[in-house]
Image (cartoon, rainbow, N blue to C red):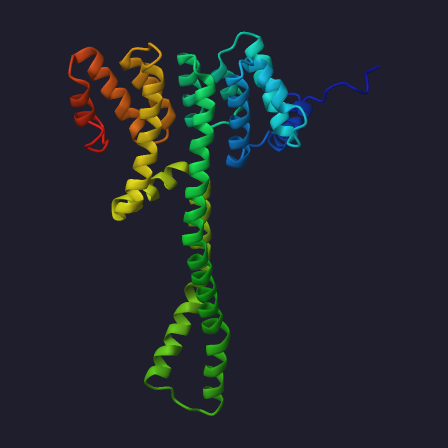
Length: 311
């Protein structure tokens, strides 16, 4: 007597149950796949780094500072992340690696934490991060003020134009056809514009949505757009370049003033501007300075795009 649970074998000799179960398992795996971990908001990070920096300055060790800060926090996600950081530090992991492991801090933040940890000035790094993020928040707020209102106006006007060409102008055209009138001059041109708009507006709207989603989802595209904007608007370039240069120069100063050699200081400082062109430029300049014997000012002038006053 055969068992009711006996696997049915197909003609090709392979178990039919296994073949049937493959697709559902793959679907379940896809549905159960964890989403992308989101970074904390800059406002939360400003408060966190300011609080941690104050406690470290009061001679409280890093693990205890994380514990005390997380107590009573309403943001449970941040509480869990800081608890994991504290556990990893207690297990002997480097501070910056413990923060990186959570996936909720970008490489610029990780680089500055590494610099502060290497220099034994972690409280200074946390305070610098709080000040830097606060400046970024102010800068982003001003950018939003300058772009959101014109953007909304353009969207409303574009929507009104499409609506008029798709809904209103065809009604006028039908009325003229009803009285057997022949359009001429500007009327004929407006009808042609309406016909063209009716044919292309779905593709136009989908294209705009696709471009917006690409900008939101892709850091590379955002960097390309930012680079193009910086090449066209000198004031924007000066603002962004100043922020980036202040970041890595202050990091180099922090490390070098605490006994770390200049080449290593430059390499570590590059992590604070990791997603910018400065990252590879600084590492190249550090290598040339260390191995080729060129003066530091020459290495910066030749292998980086820093402003002239930096060199």
